[in-house]
Amino acid sequence: MTDDPSRSRHARDLAPLRWSVATAAFQIEGARHADGRGRSIWDDFVESPGAVLDGATAEPGPDSWHRWREDIALAAALGVDRYRFSLSWVRVQPEHGRPANRLAIDRYSRMVDVLLEAGVTPFVTLYHWDLPSALEERGGWLDRATSFAFADYVEVVVGALGDRVSDWYTINEPVSTTLQGYAIGELAPARTLLFDALPTVHHQLLAHGLAQQIIRSAGAGRVGIVNNHTAVRSASEGDDDVAAAGVYDLLHNRLFADPVLRGEYPDVSMLGVPDLPVADGDLALISHPSDFYGVNYYNPTRVGAAAPDSPIPFELLPIEGVPTTGFGWPIDPQGLRVVLDQLAARYGDALPPIVIGENGASFPEPDQTSHAIDDAARIDYLARHLDAVDRARADGLDVAEFTVWSLLDNFEWADGFTQRFGLVHVDHRTSVRTPKASYSWLRDRIAAVRGRREAGVGA
Ligand code: BGC
Image (cartoon, rainbow, N blue to C red):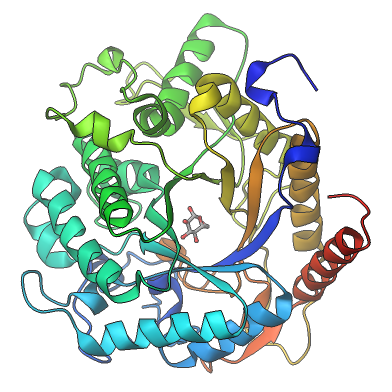
C-alpha cells in the first residue's frame, strides 16, 4: 500500500478479477453481403487497391456471421465470465433514417440468448470502427451530426437487447480513429488531416456521452467507454524530447481521458489548432460518471523531438533491447502498470473501476494447422501482463476485469490476415477453428484461480 489516496482500497476489498475475451464485428463476421448488411468505411477501405497489406477483404475469415455458435462454445469452454463482441452498425441500420434490419437484430438477439444460456455474460461494444459510409460521405466523425446518428442507432440496439444485455462499451478506442483514421490515414476512413482531425475527438466522445445517457435512461445496465492507453517515454532527459513526449501523452492519453474523467479538455493550444467544437452541456454529458473505465493496453511508446521540417511536433521511436511481437511492438508489462498508476494519480476518485478491455499479442504463425499451435510467446506475454494486473490489484488499484484480445485470429485491419492475435487459430480460407496452446493455458489458469477462490485461498 502507498499513502496515495487514490489507492485507498486494499486488494481484500476488491471483487475477484473477472475474465473476458474479445472480438469485433468487422474483424470476425465476414459475410459482408449477407442478410441486408449496409456499407461501412471498412468496406470502402478493403476495396481500395493496395490499402490492405495482403489484399484481404475480411472474407471468409472466421465467418462468425454464420459460425457464431462455435465462438460462444469456445468462450464458454474457456470459462470466461464475459464475451466482448461488437455489433455492426450497418447490419442493424443498413441505411440511415430507414427502418432497422430485423434479420440482424434477431441474429444478435439470439446470440445474446445463447451466451446467457451458456453462462457467459454478453459485453457489447456498440462501436468498433465500422462507421456507415453514408455518414462518412457527410463528414463522418468530423461532423457533429454523426454523434446523433450514433445515438439513433444505440436507441434501436438498446430497445432490442437492453432487456438482456447489462454491460456495454460505447466507443472503442476513439484515439485510433482520430490519429490513425483521420490524421494519418492508416485506418479507415484513410483521411490525412493531421491536426485538422481533432474535431473527431469531440464527436466520438459526445457519441459516448449520448449512448451512456440512453443506456442509463433505459435502465439497461453498466456502461463505459474503452480507450487505448500507452505509457509514453521520453527518448532522453533533454528538454526537447521531454516536451515532445508530453505532447504525445496529451494527444494519445489525456485528450481522451480528461473529458471523460475530469469534464474538461487539456490545453492543446501548443498545437496551434482551433478549439474543439464543444457546445454547452457537452462536457457534462461526456463526463457523466461511468460504471467502469475501459483500458486497452498493448505497448509503451518512446517519443522524441521531431525533425525541424516535420509537420508534427514529435517523433515515435523504436524501443531497443526488449522482445517484440509479430507487429514489432515492444513487449513491456511494466508499461501497463505505468498506465494504471497514471490513471489513478491523474483522476483519483473520479476513476471508476478499470476494465482492461484488450490485451494480447500477434506472433508469426502458419495460415494452416492440423494441431494446437504451441504459442509459448503469447502465453508468456499474457502471463506477464496478468502478473502486472495482479500486482496492481494487490497494491489496491481497482482493476475489475481482464480481457484477452482476441478469442480468434481475425482480420487485423490494414494488415489483413497477416497478424494473428487469437487464442484460437483460424484458417481464413475454410474458417476452421483450432485452439492454440494459449487457449488451454488460459482455461487452466481461470480454473485454477476459481478453484483457489472456492477453496478460500487468495482472491
Ligand atoms: C483494436 C483491435 C485490434 C487490436 C490489435 C486494438 O487497437 O481495438 O481491433 O485488432 O488493437 O491491433
